Image 1: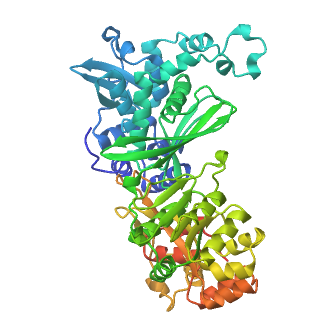
Image 2: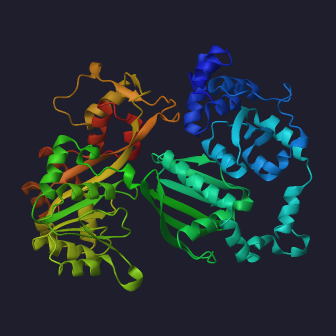
Amino acid sequence: MQPRSMKLGDILLQAAVVNQEQLDHAVKMARTSNIRLGEAVVKLGYATEEAIAIAISKLLGVPYASRENKILKPERDQSLDKIIDERFARENVLLPLFAEDGVLAIALAEPDNVLVMDNLKLMTGYEPQPFIATKAQIMKAIDEFYGNSGSFIDTAVEAGQGSADDGDAGDVDVSDARLDLDKVVAQAKGAHVVSYVNAILKQAIAERCSDIHIERFDERVMLRFRIHGTLYERTPPTPEQFNAVISRVKILSKLDIAERRLPQDGSFSFSLQNRVIDMRVSICPTVFGEKVVMRVLDKGAVELKLDNLKFEPRQRADFMKAAEAPHGLIFLTGPTGSGKTTTLYTILNTIKSSELNFMTAEDPVEFKLEGINQVQMKANIGLTFASALRSFLRQDPDVILVGEVRDQETAETCLRAALTGHLVLSTLHTNSALEAIVRLGDMGIEPFMLGSSLRLIAAQRLVRTLCPSCKQSYKPAPEEIEQCLKECWLEPAPEPRQMTFYKEQGCEKCHKTGFSGRMPIYEIYYVTAALRQGIYRKMDILDLMEVARKEGMWNMRASGWRKVLEGVTTAEEVLSVTVGE
């Protein structure tokens, strides 16, 4: 396959398949619907599948196969149906064309799908040579080559899913009731399933995926990767392979493969490209089968360097002033998946010293840090955050990290530790930094205790960063300028005529998404004398925010607008993850 030299949109314009207005409309639809550009063009009726396939053929340097040019008519005397069975061909919309000298020619609707190509190589032992064809023509050719013998129905009946003798079993998952455990285990250890799961993991790491979702619905199976906070579909296992794939994940995670009614949590590690990657696995039963979510914890992809946190200068100075203090309490707030753990690990890694004793209580321990004593919580045996923290205080600690404050007992122990000469870092689940004060009050924490111990309170969110290779500048509309100037709190305010915003475009380097990663934005409030007095007096959140603003600090929205003005992200991205006052 040759490297792409032009974008698909450029080729469609050059070949007069679409005009510029139609292309712009299709690009917009592709982004909002999370589909390919060619698919959007066809859905809008601007071009046929054949015209798009020919354009993609030129774009990728892949031969075009069709019934008209006689390529999409494989000979039956090559035993191609033994190399690729009908079910796999239909599920992945592909057709074997010929095999020669270790090379297998394959017609696909998506010849640039790396996961399918890897699966073909592992499954067949041949080096796949892609040809492009339309989905409609491939499915017709599959019918002709394999024949409509009703093999799908026969297989379902043999598996106990559609027998007429089942009576009223339509409301019961018969396949689960008749599950042969030994057979599932054998399938899970089979070469094809092992290779498929390995290919998923390899592809997830290559695409910098943070979560892998495998789930079953009434009529299909879905495989989705979360990349930069957004879920994208990938080639799923077949419904017949689904149970074996789930069992393979359970075996890797040392979970009970016979338990299908209760949620289970586990983990496993594997080595790839000379680095160890940890996977955190959660399995939850649904009405159609078990759903698996695997969180990718790739320590090699995360550098715990302070510069990577992208603090504003004042924010960095305030956070480090609190983190380098001999005692006090630091709270970081935000929803699950907003990067709180990475921020706290980075701070610990920055202040780490052989002269200090560091201890952490976490659930789970996501990354193992050198020189820091990390303890995994186990609530089933009584090892909770509160009990671990009480034990820590007898271990002569200097710095303590508590994964999350969930109850009054943990909160009070954290405050007492901070008041007795320890630096304590922890997290809370609140929507903003100052709301943590209200949350702690609801837990029964007295204002005088909180005001005396609290040193810094912060919140963070993750925004997608624009791809530097294809981001496109534009002059913001008057309403955007007005909102930015009102909320970014810059003094002196930027000149409106000189303001430039950027938006996503999409290129090969960013997989057509327009974004190349994510970065945190923060609101960080160092507890000054004025803020401490506000806490003592139980001031309203808006009044506390005004006090912080007068002290030179700013909220999340203001921090986000600064990143927009720097050309790092888009105004839409900041507005989608933050709220105004």
